[in-house]
Image (cartoon, rainbow, N blue to C red):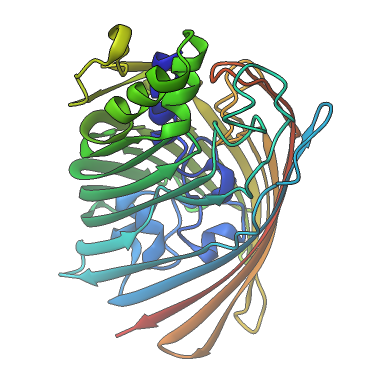
Length: 438
């Protein structure tokens, strides 16, 4: 039982973003407002503004002047948990995350353009109310009156990514790009049994090409590498978790108190975490001089998260040989995911740009491996956006997205408490972006 308590901590590390960002796994999709307007279709082949470099650094070579872009997104999430049977009074706390990013592009000459992006590609802010989930009728009920709290209470994870890049115009119809990524992660994950606090930084790379076989058809391919972390921090095993495990083993009275006193507490710990690689395919086809058909496929290699191992310095034993799990191993068996996007981009005679998009995005999980901290499920995006240019060197983009998420069934028994129910989720996102040329 204590080994499974330790696994709760491990699972907390991997909650990162899906619960609030409503993207597959724990990725944060919101990096460009102009791209969101077409549901990210064509984002890795267009050179609309400096934000396109996130999807493909080769797009930098298509910018003819220096520019600075600031993209902001406000997200409203409607999430609830419906227990199968009697439930506790708690549910999700309302969380309305704000996501921002900045990008810079500076041409060195007619063929080479430097780019810099600063954004948050992974992260989450999830909060549950106390006593959520099913009413606990199992042996751990004296320590956990409801079954949700041992699986998740809060998840506060932040990443920051700094991505210098270079785009090169090789020929009139071929562009290439290459970038270096420095990324930092800070995590504070808590449930009623354990808490994890840790941080690390790591490096990765990204590269891409765009190719136009003729004036009307444009293709882009980009790849962003996996980033591997060795996270150092603190692991706290809380008294209820230690007490529940000891009681399940037959301890009571002074012996139970002694085991809790010996084992509960904060320990230094470490674990490794691999954030997945991403492959992006993009197409832009000119239907008319003013209208483009846009397509996109984004494949994320979440299967790299098959298991996680946490080691810590809580190696002491207590009465009867009671000990904390060390190392603790959690199996995830996540699936790769793909997002398919289609969009239209139309320019009015006034130079106002209208954008429309639809996307279908797969989940990393199903009912067999659903995480209470990251209730990921298949989703559909519908987006609309517009771009305006009030002055010669200033443009503004706005966009709106509604995200429908399939109901996510969950059935968990690994914490000595049965969590059985369904997550119901959807989200609304508005974005505003300013692009300044200089």
